[in-house]
Image (tube, rainbow, N blue to C red; front, top):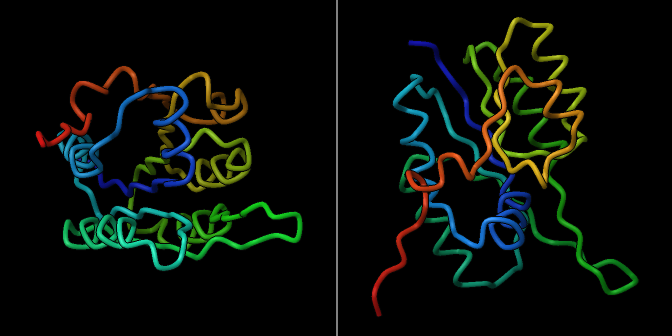
Length: 165
């Protein structure tokens, strides 16, 4: 069984869930889906956050207690009043620094910024799987990846079951 590293762009995934899937993804089920096919060496989840947000804090703790490496940074308030929280460089560095630990990189993002990273990883002999949705993925990332999985195709297996209230 090939070893895989999973790298989840949490900001991108949140955007996809809200704007394209109309469903929430259970991150633990997402990991378990890939565990059927690969020996998972590690799962990295990247997300920017609002400071003092108790709900987000509970989410991070749930991920950490599930064995997921959480990489986060606070949102920055820009002079125009908007918020910025980008972890693409962190994802890129981690994927490159840990490349000797996996055969397959599973990247949950369709962001075109990752095209060069995918090509570099492939030059090192790594297989790269992109997981996103067609309508939120750049054609460059889809073409650069060895394999593309649309989240809609696996949604039944990874969807978060909402608790009854």
